[in-house]
Length: 434
Image (cartoon, rainbow, N blue to C red; front, side, top):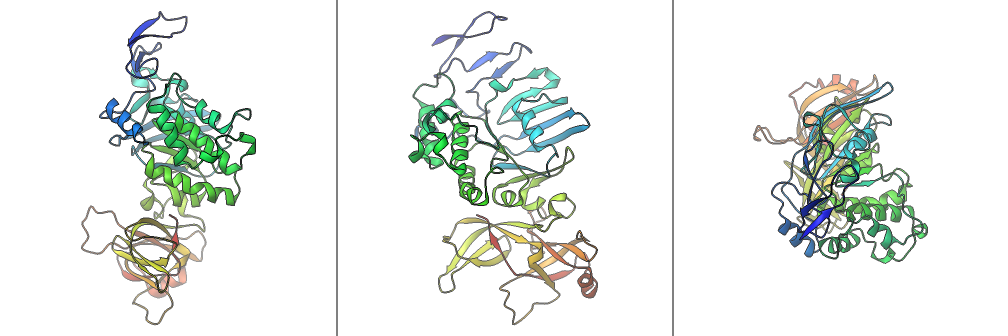
């Protein structure tokens, strides 16, 4: 039906066609004169019918992943943020780095809370929110974002149900949005909390409600600014599985800020390493974590991340066999099932090297590898060795399985290790991160 779009006193009232239960699907931007997407604008290829169909089946709108672009500069005092990133349009992109490196500032520029300069271009979730070449800047209240802060910031006078409902688009009606709200509640396992006040919740429960409120807004992108930093270890471990579930069941790209290595290992599909306002590394988390020339690998948590599939379960010894590309690893069975996709972490300090296969060892995971690079390991006595597990006959464009080993410089000398040399990597411990 035709409905009037409520405008401010600077613009005349306009009548627009509306086919969804909100004021409009398209409106005219006052500042730039450019047509910009309202709350229900979707990426190319995502039809209204598919969105409604998905919502009516308890899910979320699904579309083909759209490449995202962040090109911006921003300055405050002596600090300068200067990034140019192309990011995948699906999964969790983690912004990782020390405090003060610009992670939150970048997130605020994406949200429109800070206006970026430098011929800025902000394209997220199939939408363009800032394009200085066209004079386009969409204000925060018209960006389809869900924002989760370090503190849950819930309304104490409202119940959990009302806090979540507060995030819904205005005039959302009882159609797709209401069903999506039910899906959000079920997804985060908070149905039993709906009648409670926010003051009666634990820290982990409060953050789950805050995430639900952000999802109830039907965002094109979900922004999470260190959502676990205010929680103790037990509460962090409680909420991490729910965040992992979001990755698999909610087809909304996420930008996740953290300086915790364990959150990177568990959540990151794409990893952006930031330092002093710049992105010093960007790519698949499995590749970036195994690099030897980025700040992310300098500490004791240096290690590699491997994606694998459970091949078999040894019920006699309570072990699971996991195939990670060309490598086969055995790890403790924690209720895994055959065919399940898993992510494992191998710390560099848990890998030793040998020139030949060692017999009669308690170490059960021994893999053939090729030395890819050798660099200083952060202490004069240490070296960090990058290894490639992919077989020699692998396709040239195939993604290599990378491993790191932290050994002494004396060991490098005694083994006469060289780039390109074949070795055996003996892994003392493998950690299942999901």
